[in-house]
Image 1 (cartoon, rainbow, N blue to C red):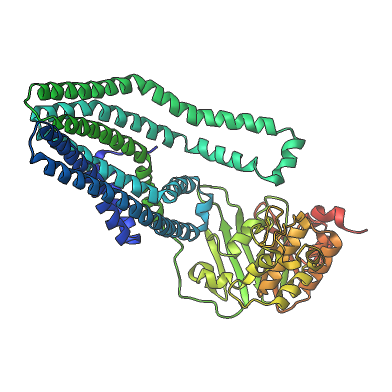
Image 2 (tube, rainbow, N blue to C red; image 1 turned 135 degrees about the horizontal axis):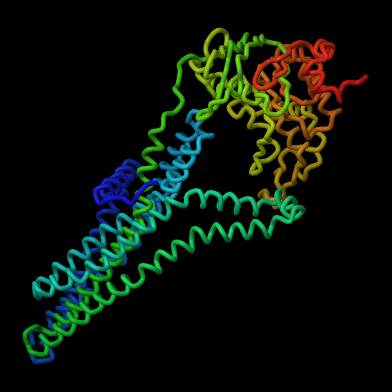
Length: 598
């Protein structure tokens, strides 16, 4: 668990935020820092001349003819300062809006790009995801963190200047006000530390709460929630999680309340005492009348600036603490790039005595797997759930590296080849459908080859091959319709919801549109009727220029494969054609017995 930051760490973190901001938008940062200085000085200067005006008014009332000109001068200066503050505020708002956009986009894009470039095993690593969650919070509020840092700088200057300005009246008064500020600073920092500690202790609670709240707002889950009467249960669970987080935070503030009231009382006593002292000084003729306004404003500004300063530091403490998580996350190594490009279709894929276990686990999921897949082969991988089939696909695609043995492409290890050039050779359709709900049917198909030249003919051909053309034509705008009933186009035409089987055909069309030389199908047609599936795979298995690797539990899908590999407990226990494996009456026969005719 990360503890609260020490003062040196806070300063380093603030410098880090400023450095990142400056790299993203240097002119805006300079403008903001200059603005912080002006925001602190303008009010004090205005108060100074307002006090001068009050004094000269009293002098003029006493019959001094020369005081009139001084009154006019001070009024003009005060008005000009007020106008400058107004103009500056408008300019500052405009520049900061632009700065927030530029900085947010740069920091967010850098983090997203880094996240998508990590070694694949990290997406299954809890420590990495915890770190990512904290770093993501920092990146999402980065520009606002810098705004608050500017507020800290402005209020620090304002508080120091206000106390220093009191020295011009009486040095003991300045010291008295300064000492009165310290209890509030202590209480606020103590509360801040407790809140940061609470935040770090409840990362898991908030993650669970966020997932739960997201799920109960998704229409596709509503039927499950109602059928199993889970709605009230999940709402109660949400309340319980919020209590652990929010109520505990409020309880921390409640326990600190007596100290907060005491520090506020000391500050108020100091303000009243200062005003009584200066009032008596004015009445006794020891100070000009304008000094009352001057002291009242300076004491008030010192107290309010210090309160805002400490409050802002307290609120930002957690955010700048997350900078260290952000920096740590950005230092995580990404997949090593390689200049070994695949420029032509792979002729041979070989698993050579491959074993694999997931990071942090001891049990091998794959054990001594050896096979050779040549261009144009149609192979199938079968086995019970948990046999290692999907893990085999992850190693084949280079998402994971073997813990023992080698996976080679034309004799070269997958992990030394440029992974993007390898992925460009693949068309992969997995069990979990990737539905781009925000896009049209056309875009969902076209995303299969986003870098290629867009072609209506290619889209139509891909939909036809995936047996998706008929239902796409029935959509309100055909292939240009949104495939989510929450979406609406510029003409006000709402999208349509697709069934599971229709989504599978649409994602198949994306694969056909890609026209990759190697097609990997990991249980992709579970929601498609058997006849349509049979026609689709018949079409695939007869295209001899493609290499087909199919993972399926349907005999009708894999019957025409050149070779079937039977996985059991992470090992290949049988291999051969469907007819050969059925004749053996071994593991394959037992798995598919209910689907074997006769």
